[in-house]
Length: 167
Length: 368
Image (spheres, rainbow over the protein chains, first blue to last red):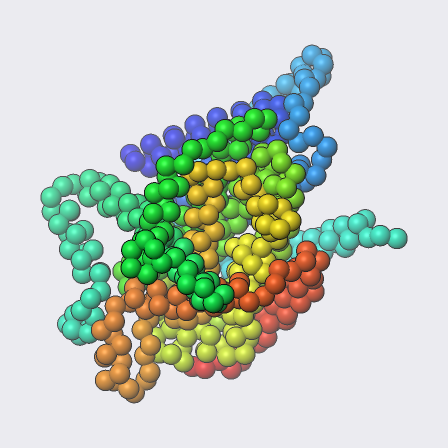
């Protein structure tokens, strides 16, 4: 009962701030609204008792990516200037694109949400299990994908340095 | 029974009694609701009281470092000076400023203070005085404390003042850099203790040689020093106080704030110093465990009489004194020195240190 009330509060919070983030015309304010959306999502994970994902959401998205967003927005020309509206034709096209996106995602979620229950472990997932799954080499363990992602990130870092390096 | 004799002043009996009394009087959800509200009130009160105490302590200790007397007019030895300051700041006018982004300007202080309040909820202050014991406690602490920098960046930008803006940018660069070192050095200890849960970390450090600082000897000592440096830098206090360097930037990112809004930044800065020291105590120095030496039973008994929260605050106090000592001893760094220190020294040392610690744990070379 109480969980449901909290869920509805969080859901309204997330939906409201998502709408604000999209409709706001000053980019820096939009990024702050986006931050609230991400924090609300962390709240949803907390309701699900998945504390690791909640903390990861706060640390990575809210604390890491949003800080970089705000930082780089501050480096642009006019962070507080209002963005002009697009031409009506482009607005209609993008509205259709957005609707199509919602339709596809909704379809997938609607027909697969019941299947997800099979994989959900009961109760809180222990941090040790998570670590073993991430770093193990056995069946259903993810050492290789983990290393592949770390290689990708390394390539990104080297690329960044190459671009930023003074000749 | 043994616990009752040897821990006479602990609070866990009081909290358990309160809980059972509330549950006998009303349904579960009512009892829980009242407990939540009570805990919130106690935390807020502790937040304010600790800040006041810290401000007084800092002013007094600073005075002694500089051969002055410090506050000495309000009350004996000026002991209620910070209460008077608090009343003054509560009564001060909040000056509205033209041409600022109103929403962000008023929102920014809350980011800073909420993030340090969130940390407060997960710190173990004593035996039974631990509000939320997350499975991932250490990670949670790192995660929520990274939120405050957004408040600083927004404050700097929305003030519409170039000094504020420069201060905020410096603060951002500094915080992002030093957060890495702080996180990595805590991770070193997570490798040693094999857990991220703060209660487990504290309970595994019973005797003095089990304190993580001594148990992991060399790498733990390196991690401890690096954590103190990085934590000190994260709180924006000298010698890392470039974001609010008075002589260059008036007051940095909070130049335009007045009254209670400025008070929020001020409070958060002091509490962050406390939180950094508190985390270091919990992770490296045995948390609320009293000093216990194996075999010295009489000594251990006497030490057990001192309640756990006193131990926590005493150890934290020592670390805070260290931080003040550093603050008033070293001159301010330049921005390039600051970034060099992090990226060329602390971070590589930290990474190597982490590997050394992993080897140590794998071969069981730590003190058992």
